[in-house]
Structures are given as C-alpha cells and as structure tokens.
Length: 320
Image (cartoon, rainbow, N blue to C red; front, side, top):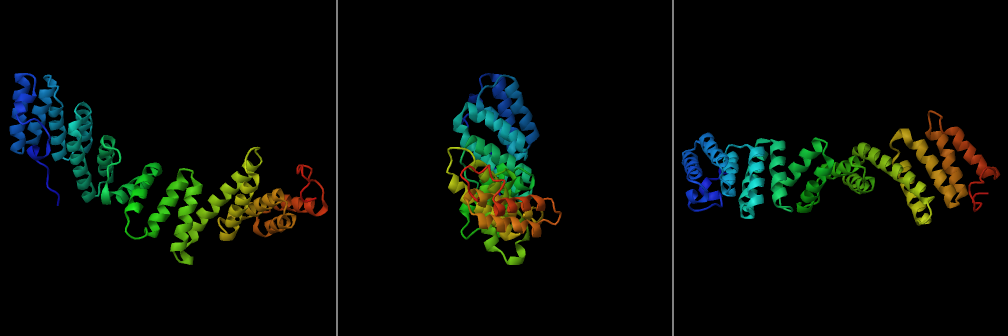
C-alpha cells in the first residue's frame, strides 16, 4: 500500500512558510493552513490556503500547497490544475508536482479508476514530457482503447511492448492492430494483425483474417489508383497492390468482398500485362459473387481480353 505524502516531506517549499507570503494576512492564513494540515484537517487547510491566495499571495509555493492538499484528498483534477499553475511560475516545483500526480495515478490504478489514472498521468506528462509510466503503460493503453481513444492508446501500447521482457501477449498485439485500423492506418495495422495470426492457432484466426482481408483489399485498391498518377513507381505499386489483393483472397475474408478482391486482382494483372492471370482472376468472380453483381462486369473483362476488343484504354496495347 502506498503511503500518503506528507506536506513537509513532499513539498519543495520555503523553510519558513510565513516568509513566503507577501503580507501579514497572507502569512497568517498560510500558517493556519499548515497547522490544520498537520492535524489532518484538510478541508480547513484548503480553505486557509485558498484564502491566502484570495488575499493576494502570489508565491507559487502557496498554490503548490493547495495542489498538495487536493492530492491527499484524492481530487485529481483540482490537484493537477493547481500544480500546472504552480510549476508554470516556478519550475522548481515540477518535481514535486510530478511525484504527487504519479502517486495519485498509482492510487487510481489500485482502485481500478482508469479515468483518474489517465488524468493524473496526462497532467504529469504535460509537466514532464517523456516521463516513464512503468507498469501503468498497459492499463493506460487499455483504458484509452476501451473508450475509443485509439490515438491516445497507441503510445502507451508501444511503451508496454517495449518494456516487455518476453514477446507481447497475443491479445495485446491484436489490440494494437485494431487501434491502428481505427485511426485509418491499415499499413501498420497489418503488421500487427499478421504477427497476431502467427501467434495463435488456426481456429483462432477468424476475426483477424477479417481485418487482414479488409485492410489488404483497401490498400490494394488505393495503390492501383495511385499507380495511374504520373511520377510514381508504377511497377512497384502494382506489384504491392497485387500482393495485397492476393492476401485478401488467400485468407478468404471478409466473405462479402471476395468477389471484389478477385475482380481487383484481375484489374491489377491487366495493368501489369499478365493477360492469362487476369482472365483466371475474372473467372473466379463467378464463384465468389453469390449475389451476381460483379459477374457480368467480370465476364465482360474476360471477353475483352480473350477476343482483343474494348481495351483501347490501355495505351500500350497490353492484353491485346
């Protein structure tokens, strides 16, 4: 169990508290606050410290007293706000602020209060960017993940994985993939989905295959479209698009886009000049498209290649 920080042991303040205030009335309020704090009367201490501020005490040490009192009262938001103010005016108070905020984060973690933990850590990181969060990285990542804050979750997942002694657990790897997918980064998502797929048994791959198939198809289609833009490495883009479209048909998921994936493979192969491969891909559409919406288009493409007509859009005459 963590010990509650004491005022004298944790605040980096003036030795003579009365001397920190600019006026006698301020000093008196601060002294009364210190006495109340020492007796465990935190509400009274808080009232006195805030009175001193209202009376004109400009010393950030007094603001830090307010923040510290909120810490012992387990009020994360208020403690953070006052510590940010105090540290902005006196950087020497940053160490104390970070220490107290991380203390609150630990307490919140023990209580299972993800929101309080995240708030405390966020404020500590605001005061000291790059601060290590230790074994709180994964709980923080999952807190953000479960609340749909995928962009915030990813840095903490990365910290947790970097600190892991052994390879990360499969569920963590999968969650990272989903987080990347949710922010629209399919390229990085695929790295983690494929890694997860290798870590689990075949009958546990259904959901990840759905993600792999979807991401691969979307990336393939985007690459083929970009290959038509002058200035890019057209051959490399088409080769990667073909690899990705093939991955979608290899995993066989999602079922409702398999016909589109085969049709996309055909379109890519036409652009690459592989007429036989394109015909084979178009022929597969009939077996994958239960609804029949792509069958006619695929048959038209097949016939265009077979009979050498309707391919005027291919300026170099491929597949004629």
